[in-house]
Length: 250
Image (cartoon, rainbow, N blue to C red; front, side):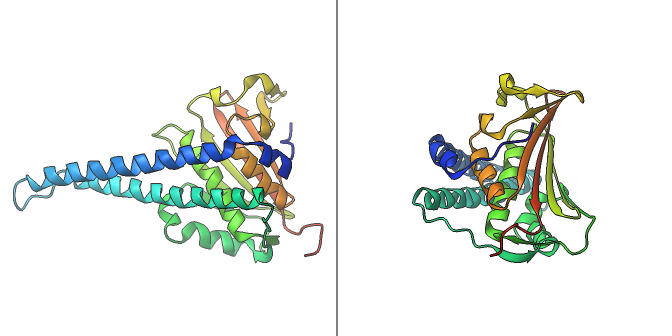
């Protein structure tokens, strides 16, 4: 079952979305504070070590510094989510679409600072078409990718990273994310429909994580489609398709 479209009315009616995002912001700030406190603790222990020896906690400090960097990236993009929703609610939201060379844009995005460290080896690009141009709002596409990636990160086990694949098909861009969920409980199983291939499909508005209203809305603005599949009750696949050329002329 394909994910049904989520229009502006649906997004505005999702009154809990702003509360969800602010809850995420509070959680991020708490995590940053915790990481800073750990760095202070490790730093104090390192100073008490033997002179001339490599600090035993240097690796822990590096990991905590990396965690802070990731949390700051998430904080910035969540604030951008708030900005988008505010414009939508004020009816002042106007996407700024321009003809974009998608492979060039996405390659620069995932490899530029600070996102290169965030994505690491989790992203791959598959080229089935050399020239893939589309009218897109580059800012919104960035937000789309970041929302998908952080959602997968939050629902993946701590020792497993999700994967993200950009495939340039002949007539559309395919953004596909894969991850093993912590548990299948974040889906409303009563809304799932089983298919012959043993997979379960869900409508996005039936998910109990309201950030999908925003994800679906951005996809719809680009005349795209969104589908979520769960296999074996934990292997989750999210698939976004965005056509290269919209049906209308800008």
